[in-house]
Image (cartoon, rainbow, N blue to C red; front, side, top):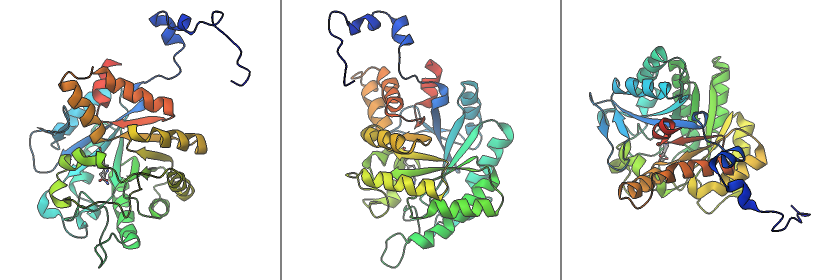
Length: 331
Ligand code: PBG
């Protein structure tokens, strides 16, 4: 760019914008179904799927309706899903014990999915929040803070049970220090050498997760608390690079930035610094905002595609988005 001497009228940048064909040919970034991962909620206590109020078009599925949903996603060319469970409330406790039950609801659902659709990649979170009565991602110490090393032992076990159930990609979303190393170690020991780890490396303590808490029905457990003692401070980016470096050294195959649109600078810095497979999570609050404005006709529905393309431009290899299915239909 330094010796860039071209000038108008020799250079008319509008020339390459003059029709759709040429615009397509010179497009620097493209979106395809290979870039999209669909998060799916599945709830233990229901027989029919139920819509989530704050996430237009997104449902809590039953253990049977989720199979239909996955069949449709497979037919659209989607290659991976991230599954989030809503378990029966009487199974929650202070320690999140149900997380390490090999026959828990999520592990059973994953087994059934893999039996029916061996080709779809199943991603599952490692974190205790679906299983704890307090809604934190780990177990608490006597001060009421999340106990890092005590939590690690449970997460290892949770990850192992997920791998045994057939999970292709283990996704630690808990933000404990050392979790990637602990999980990688147990997977190696137990011979799950090809189980991949997608690390939620730069996961911020964000208010954009609000609708997710409604979706997994943890809002009433969580109340006004925060996850500030383990998730990252919104102000920081150097720290995000530090987190990513640690996770790569501990054995992550893929790293992730979350949320997405307010953190495109982080996506770009992570990709440019590490040249690793870098995913981004367009989280529930981002989707809810866009969808709400589209519903009101304040924005065209094309804003969703635009938002996803912006992730590609920033350097993301793949996007977890609630809009995966609807976008795949239009691609
Ligand atoms: C659980 C988890 C959360 C999300 C994904 N995994 C919530 C949280 O950490 O509070 C948020 C996803 C979204 O908002 O779409 N640890």
